[in-house]
Structures are given as structure tokens and as C-alpha cells.
Image 1: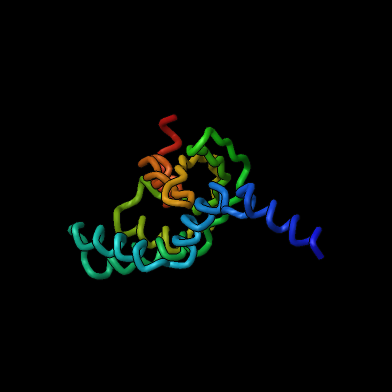
Image 2 (image 1 turned 90 degrees about the vertical axis):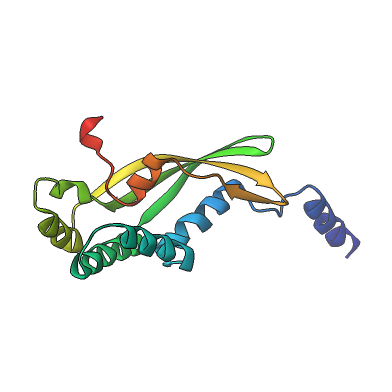
Length: 155
């Protein structure tokens, strides 16, 4: 019994129980997959700022919700340097860029029914702060890739 207690004590004291940076990234991506209130609030704010008809707003929101729900990811690598970490992630999303030559309305209709998927490898920077790992603001490019609108043709 004392040996079990000692092993548990050592496990807790060495910090092995604290979540790693990859869990912070998983939590971040799951906010999209689960249509977290904050994610949807930001989407609604963006749609409010855009000069779109109600039909266009609804089509866009439907397409994005589907994108979020069907987002697939896999943690590939974690690299740590003290209280900083980089997490490499493979993302699979719908490729909404394919419809770029269509009218805006037709593009929205195609986004809603899109089946073409694309794979990206992205990097998330994290910081250990106040007892937990946090994702630092992802780059604009990473956000474009999550949303399936990254212009990979210009690379």
C-alpha cells in the first residue's frame, strides 16, 4: 500500500498529470467541432459586418457549421521549450476555394454541398501560463485553413 501511495505521490509531484500543449490544441479545435458559443458568436459578428442578404448569411453559416462539425485533425508532433510549445497538427477540411470562379451566391450554394476535402499541416504555438497550456492566437493563415478558404493556389 505504501508503495502505491509513493508512486502516486511521485507521479503528481513530477508534473506528469498536467495537461500538455496538445490537449490545449485539441480543446481549441473541439470548440469549432462542437459549435462553441464563442466560435459561433464570432461567426455571427462577421456575418453581421458583411453586406450580405439574409439568404446569403444563412447559406454561409450553414456551410461553416458543416465545416466545423466535419473538421478532422490529428496531432503529429509536440515540441517543448520551457513554458513554450509548438504543436504540429494535420487538418482535413472541405476545400471551399474550388468555387472561386463562380458568382458569390453560387459559391455559397457550392460550399453548402461541397464534398472535396483538403489536407493541411499547421502549427499552433502554445504557452504554459497560470497552471495550464493555452493556445496563442493562431495565425490568419491557420484560421483560413481551418475554414477551408486558404488560397493554396498562390503558394
